[in-house]
Length: 115
Length: 109
Image 1 (cartoon, each protein chain N blue to C red):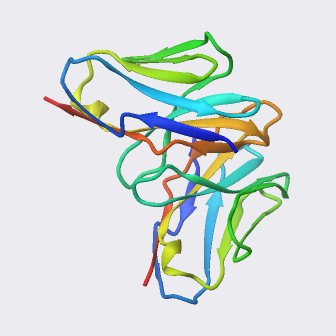
Image 2: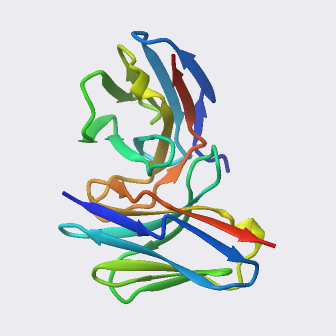
Image 3: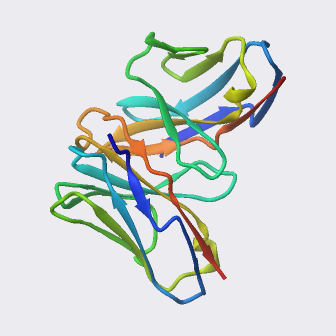
């Protein structure tokens, strides 16, 4: 079975531009979460979506937004890019949102470089 | 605020030299603790989930344990292919994972 897929693999943007990152979850998984990982640190939670609704938001500015589509795929949008947005953006999927703690399976990530 | 601290930051072992990685956490209401392995430039790969103090899980040369304040990842007779960054994360609500900074493990042949 295919795992979590993300596109694009790499992306180079300049300050002030907008970027859209895409994620397809594991078949049958209804929850998608987004994380930002800066070099040398652990991933930081950005958003979680379940059944097309936002279920959680991390401590990120309003320049970051996301949505989930009827097929459970998801997009992460970042406006007005800053140099500090350069990072590995990770998408993770799980079968459901957490009442318990479902295992989240991560995709390969999108490496965003802001110049 | 949930906090996760991993130690050591980096660990160098000789092939076959067993050791342990530590994950200390301060949370309000632990729903689960996760261990992941991450190779450079790749996404984290799931290893274990632990839900309650006293629980243990094993997979090949790895064994994870959980107490009320910390978790250990024991590596028995490691091989060079075990070299990676090992990440610990806690889940306290709606599936949000809070990660530690990771332990970089290098196993020399």
